[in-house]
Length: 221
Image 1 (cartoon, one colour):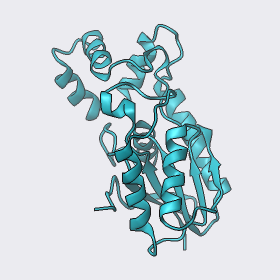
Image 2 (tube, one colour; image 1 turned 120 degrees about the horizontal axis):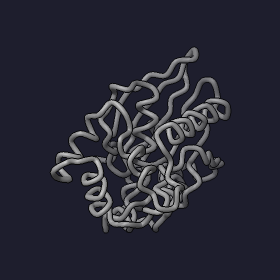
Image 3 (cartoon, helix red, strand yellow; image 1 turned 90 degrees about the horizontal axis):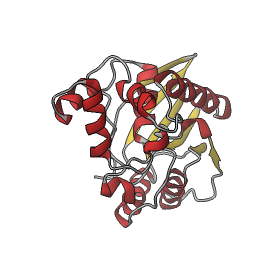
């Protein structure tokens, strides 16, 4: 037996819908975001019983986790916060339009268009987005790659410490954070591109080793 982690991205929010950067900032879940979380909970009902549940410190993650647990009949399961698995910090760019910031990055990096920048970033070997945003942030608060990935590593370690050695746990986190966690386990496992809202990536931990079982599954279809 091993520890099985159901790593879920929070439901769709207002900022997701209107295309604004949402890292340490927060916005409410949309009705469709709540329904997607509810549908995921119903899909898990009778198939998995969680031994523990965790989420990041962001309200959108906590709200998603609570909806999932209630919909699957485990509303009484305590929900613990792991601050270290919160989303990337965009610093002074928090809340800005996504397209505007990517346009600024493309120009700074010398790309001819946002599309060519996206292609280079998504297929790159390191976190060019984090590195560039941290360079350009007027407030100096945005995380660089080492800070972001180091924090996520701490979060994963805390998850292991707080989870049963054998069992199933829910962890609700964020798009870039989930990509980061997957790349900590296997750098070739995924592109630098977020999974969809309210999808599940399943991880196994046994004998000190992580294994990725699936990435971005929509279990509620």
